Image (cartoon, rainbow over all chains, first blue to last red; front, top):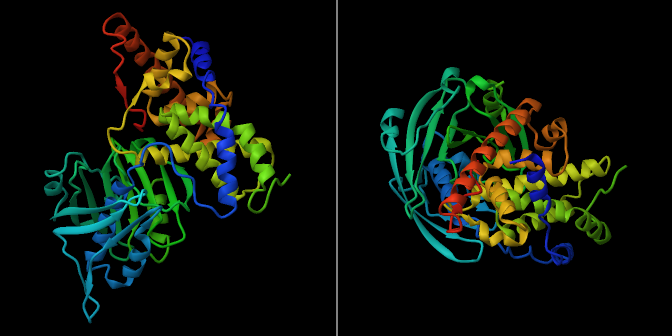
Length: 256
Length: 181
């Protein structure tokens, strides 16, 4: 293939004549306080994103180490774009949260308003080896363990409905912020961000075999994270306190 | 020159859409491989432009911002796209004129996301490597590597297309996943 043929082929692509007018009309509609224009293309798997969001949220809710303090934060986080998640939980008078960790039901409202009930199966493992034997992809935690973090536990989530499995790894280190790593096979959804997100990309040393990483920072706690892809698996790293970004910054620094 | 500082005016939106929508559609279609999805991405880019109303130093700065936002939207759409969502090159027949162009376009669509973006910006938009690095926020070295690797993959894919041409070509129900990273 000659480069000029490549250039010629791609240069032949042009938007249809009525597209610009439609976009301008839609922008004007939004400017006047109207709704965001209805999408023409695929449904972008919002319900699936919501499922993973739910899994993350539920994981935090059910982890006594991280406790009640972040409960309200999680509630705020459950709204994702045009989707709404409701996680059923009870709170005892002493503040302890009760959520069924083995069998979680969430209701998802997708972009088109359809409600979908989702059941997430969760299996807990004490070691990475045990978890690894039950997921169809390899988890590599890169430099976290080198920093002195140890694994508290690993949860393997089975989304069912053909959505496959993902894994959540809890890491802790004395005197440092606890960290949660969510690993999802490439191509599946791996983040639960709202639309109000700033992105920063950072370089990763080649020896880490990670091409790049990005930090997504949002207004609310727990929605900032370090996302990267390695060997076919997408990773999302979140400091657990949700109060400040120091933990995340240390993680990012560890890649420099 | 500061182009704006609050929600963009209707006139400004119209000018910017008229000037850049075709360029953004081109790159979105190459990334997503689907006409309606590409149009959604362009629409969302301009809505962000309008509502965020960023301030730019000049037109090039503005263009780079629009490209960065559009490619990030496409990337997010890929992430949110259901697994195993595929495209059919025949559905894009409005965007190529000859079987040869179809083969080239299909080879490009088969490239992983990160290679498609740099190849498009380099060959179609005419950006140099440093500018591409600035636009998509990676190092110059990484851009060079992606260009090199993208060209290699393109050659391999296109050769495969040639082989298909000689054999079962125009079975043409070949489905391709455009959103692999």
